[in-house]
Length: 494
Ligand code: SF4
Image (cartoon, rainbow, N blue to C red; front, side, top):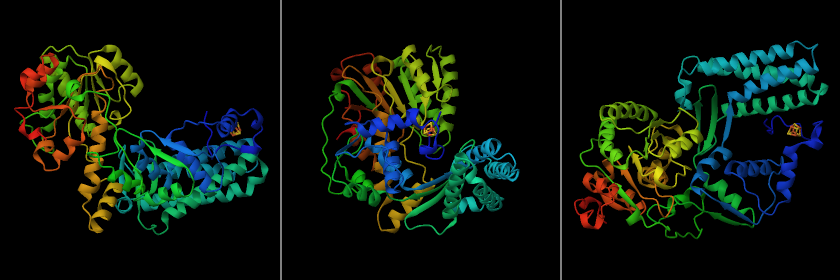
């Protein structure tokens, strides 16, 4: 059951009095403390700004946990997105309403069917299961313009038919309003691009989205903050890069905000080790994933499974999966191997915890919000430094904007962003005072590039090593002081 702005009939609904959604909203408006996710917070901001409704009570303090995600989420809400899913839902609802409330008007279900067909045809222009492209690349695709115009005209026709029947039932009236809003959004999408925004298309397995995203949410976010007398608190373990909050502040326009870091309760030097293996090839060379698996195998054996292997691409994750299965069979290693996508994230994590010696391979979506305390997770292997792909339409527009303004997009944006993502991945390892573990970062740029130092210095202050024997000894619980760990790794000294 879902209730959205699009399908809720509000005051016209016959179940209005017993509705549990409205009841929950009423309770939220009366509460002293409301706990919501970031999306709901921004949905409330958006609805207030539009003068449509209020979901949350007025408050004097807003605390954002996991605040490193805010720039991304705010970008979604302060930008505009239309999905082909919305068109298909509208077509479906219009057909249902036609059956219920205007059986004598055959033109309506026909128009809805036409919208359904043209929308599906538009999706079929993209053979890919997923991907993000800037608008100019999409326009070059054969058939895109014609399919887009066909879907957009089918929507306009449906608007006209719905308008002619809207008086006959609240459901028809609601469909008409939705269709008008969607048609207006489509028209806006074709209008000249607003300043400092990027237009792009994303394909999912069943849908397309058409997006206009602001390159920076700093101004709009700042306006929100200045527009209300409230205390705003942003917390996360990963807001700063080497203790410096400038990147985060700039993203949200919080230039004067006081900031502070507190020491972690964990004794990283004793509990954890950062391992950067020697002799790794450059990350974009063929055979890189093989090298990652080869370097990781002895460490996985030493940690007796209990490992996350995190990859920056799904392709690398799948390749590593088959290599690992082969190697485990060849070397008779008994560790169960779990792969992202085989089951839901919750089920996979539950199995990982229960098995106690499993190896789980995942991609970016496993980097955050995963909590495995204790012995089940003792090793996190990260294949490459997580630089976002520069061909991503939003990122590439941001990079151009910074560079054109005379800045250095790599140092000001891409690097801090990668550091924050990497800290999230690293944060999976030590979740408790009793946890022990090794973070293995295979990417040789961590040591070989001048910016590598800035990255590892931003990570928690773990013991560092480039020597496999030291890592194996860590797992064998030999006293590391005796091994004088780190002596053989001058590149990793402060
Ligand atoms: S008011 Fe009616 S349509 Fe809206 S959420 Fe409640 S039951 Fe659903």
